[in-house]
Length: 380
Image 1 (cartoon, rainbow, N blue to C red):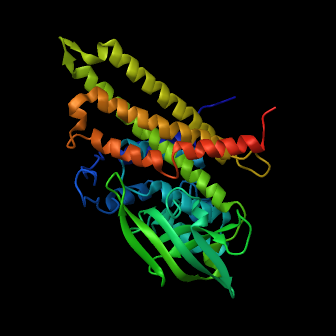
Image 2: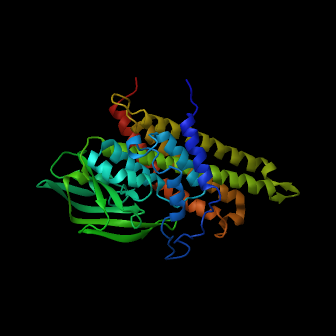
Image 3: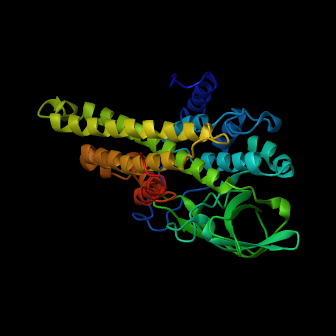
């Protein structure tokens, strides 16, 4: 079997490295240290460069001006973006556009996707539920009213909500059994939609999205079975790619620092205790990579009749959440007091790592999910 990336996937990664070259993580401090500190909106200049390199349309078909690539290519690009903490909704935008292209109506595709691929529209996804700990599709109720729909509910911690032109919101269909959900395509400025500012541990601006009697036309709701499950799997796997890229850069920074920091006349990287800790984190990153690519491949090959991706996604998210936490903690330890300096970039990476660790649920949530899958489909 050939486990190498395809020429097109490698080309996407190479294009991403070119776009992100020279991007420097900004110095927005954590609100925990500077109350009220909030990052500015998305980096519009970087967003334009991504659009110019056709990296906002990776998952779109040729009919919409896209490259027709898969989840693996997207994860390769996300991995590069996380190394510089790129402040763009690349994951949410790409996933939202992909689900509209794969499950939405032809009218929705024609209305949204070409403009999204060119970066003229910014898309995001509300995927955290009411509290961040419950299934996101249960936080909002959708009920039919005539030919359209009415939505009520609350979604918390919606990324890029203040910058996006459209938010994809999962919702439970009123009066149906659990698991019956739709995806609402909410344009900016609808009556009944309220945004309340929230701030993440990384200083990024989020929003609580409140919906009160929001009316949508039938064409603004995706009713296809499995659409939300597919979108959630892609978002979770993309989060793992971000964690991997961040962790790789942090370990690289740690190697650079321990290679030049001397104690007793020798670089501390030559000390066994330091080398062993760094080696353990390297093993974490390799496990994160192996499980990530397995999950991304499962999503990319998700043809009818294929094995479901849920188990592989759960394993990848467990490794990503726990692995990235260990990587940044070890980095802080090996940097000593220098690592605690909020003017040094490591602080920003640590804050983002904590956000990624908990995004879409912590490791424990995916361990429970994996246990449920194993119980329903026992091995042997």
